[in-house]
Length: 84
Image (tube, rainbow, N blue to C red; front, top):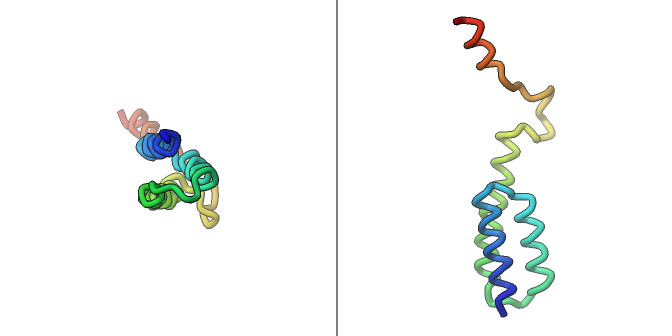
């Protein structure tokens, strides 16, 4: 009786920590194990947050298919050190 709530709680924590891939895996496990749960509406709300997070993380991290070249890291720090 508490297992569905535990899955929802885990997903909520994972979303808060921006671990969207793991949250999506947990969501799928929830659907597989509790297909007729009365908590499906809460799972759907979390799914919306997960989907938004996954879309946003692709934009921020440059994991989109149309990004070319390696990510640039540390260039501003280096520039500041040189100019001093």
